[in-house]
Length: 77
Image 1 (spheres, rainbow, N blue to C red):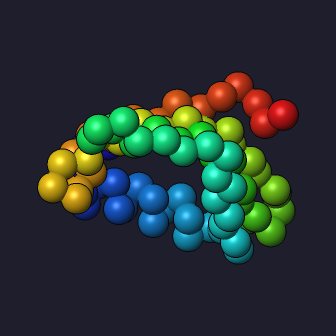
Image 2 (cartoon, rainbow, N blue to C red):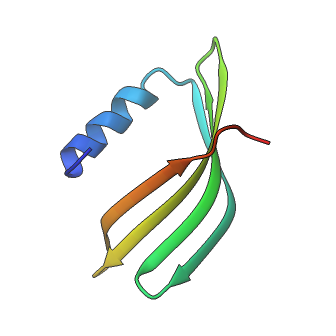
C-alpha cells in the first residue's frame, strides 16, 4: 500500500471484522531516524483467534512516518 488513505483503508477493512485487537510489543529500539520493533498482533474475529509475529522498521522525519516496512515471521512461537 502507498499513501495515507490507502493504508488507513486497508487497516480499516481488515480490522472491521475483528471483535478485539491486541498488539503485544516484544522489543523496540531507535537508531537516529529509524525505529525498529518486534511484536505479536492478536486478532479475535469471533470465529478465529489469529496471531501474527511481526518485525517493523520505520523511518521517522519531522515526527511523521515517511517509510514503513513490516515483515511477518512464519509462525508465532
